[in-house]
Amino acid sequence: MKTLHKRNLHNDRYDFKELTKSNTSLEQYVSLNKYDDLSIDFFNADAVLALNKALLSYFYNLEFWEIPKNYLCPPIPGRADHIHYIADLLKESNRGTIPKGKAVKVLDIGVGANCIYPIVGNSIYGWSFTGSDIDEDAVNSAKDIVKNNKSLNSNVNILLQTSSDDIFKNIIQENDKYSLTICNPPFHKSKKEAIAGSKRKVNNLTKSKKRKANLNFGGQNNELWCKGGEVVFITTMIKQSEIYKNNSIWFTTLVSKKESLDTIYKELKKVNPTQIKTINMSQGNKQSRIVAWSFQKDSK
Image 1 (tube, rainbow, N blue to C red):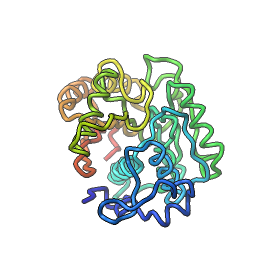
Image 2 (cartoon, rainbow, N blue to C red; image 1 turned 60 degrees about the vertical axis):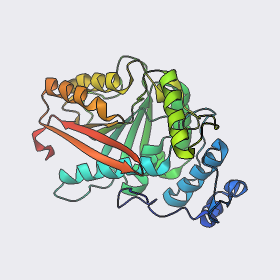
Image 3 (cartoon, rainbow, N blue to C red; image 1 turned 90 degrees about the vertical axis):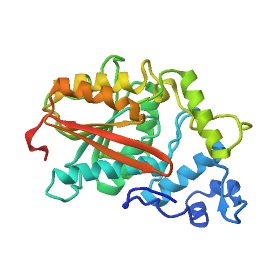
């Protein structure tokens, strides 16, 4: 049973007959499963890529979506959930109404080659986005997606972060005003840990150790792991957010591991925000959460 956000467009089962109309290349991967339902092999990277293209075309009116080989091919329903939950956060600051349109400016830290958050956020809510990434190939890919989709042309700006030590510096300018920043940080500490995590995921899904683990069907080092994992990345973000406390109403990040929260909360207390919120998300058996903080009094 799916436990996605109530506004998520992916709460129903995939209608593969309709989806193949949006991306005809998907058809070759669709067949009857053991329950006599149309489906794909979700362990086949090419099949998942074709499914993503179909989903983005069918639900989000995207005309073009290509990503470089071996880059992260994200699960669209989960990324959409993230967007809907931060929309609820903005709703609390807007008299109970979700703010829509270009006036809502979102900074996506680590936009990735796939540019998923700007695609979904702009399509559903009309928000404008700035996306940053430290990987030049990822930036070029995201720029290509924006360039080849009229809906994104004037609503999404992609920037290269040239410093590996900085998250907001070089990206946020002195007079910039964002409604919020979002981030889905690399949560593993090393490639070895990432592979071990993927193996556990595959084994849980298949109840078998015969299938080779795939790192979410791609993913570069900076997409999946970094030194110290998500705790180090997020604590760095918290420290640096204080410098830019007047440039964004909310700072937010996805936190994959529950055990990371204690350290994150301790770090947040050091910068003395006016508000701290934790938003729990559930996607099937997967549990995660968004941690949000604000330095502004009018964020309620």
